[in-house]
Image 1 (spheres, rainbow, N blue to C red):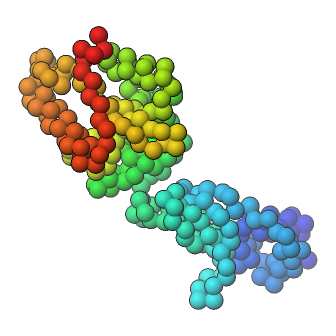
Image 2: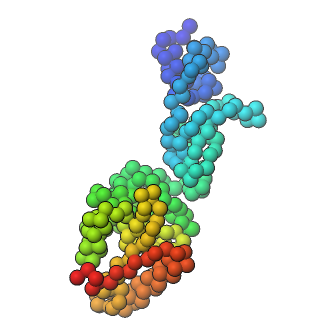
Image 3: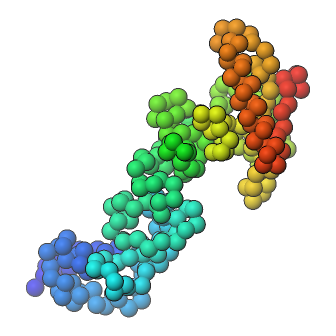
Length: 267
């Protein structure tokens, strides 16, 4: 005869979605004994795993039992954030062994920074993994703006805000206009394919109400046209012009509207 404490544990684990085999290993009780104490729970059982999110996977339902699988662990039908539907072992979800369909993380070898804070930035979700397998994250700044930042930028302390604390006068002026017009936008927007060594950031990205990209804006301050010495050397200027040229060419090839207001426009 099992103690009430052990019975309660068995029922609790079963209610959380653990299979009878898993509960048997955890409690040391025979599977037949476990069946006896959870039999009444099988009718109209509410599986608390359903609706939960594990990494990029959201549990939709229990998956049908498959005779071709040796494991008796419960399996779940999950939808990845990329839209793909897969079946996953429930224990793999709970332990964090499986966090996606494999679309972007390529084996769950990227440290999950979701919900962590770095300065003024809070990581919201994984945006993509670039060709060098660097994770790029969607982050929200305390000022309310969104930005995409690499894991290195966050962990090294290089990126601690959306740039709101050090924006140029022209960028601040342009952003004030966007806010006044109640336009849906984000700052420092990157497109993985538009790159020079790494994905290049655009000052502003404009979206419609369904978050579809409408246009990109690059504020062209004086440093885009002339060298001023010090940190802005002639070599820096040529590098900046090359990056500007790549952005312009990419937008032209992909029919993306690119606005490039100059510094005189904001004065």
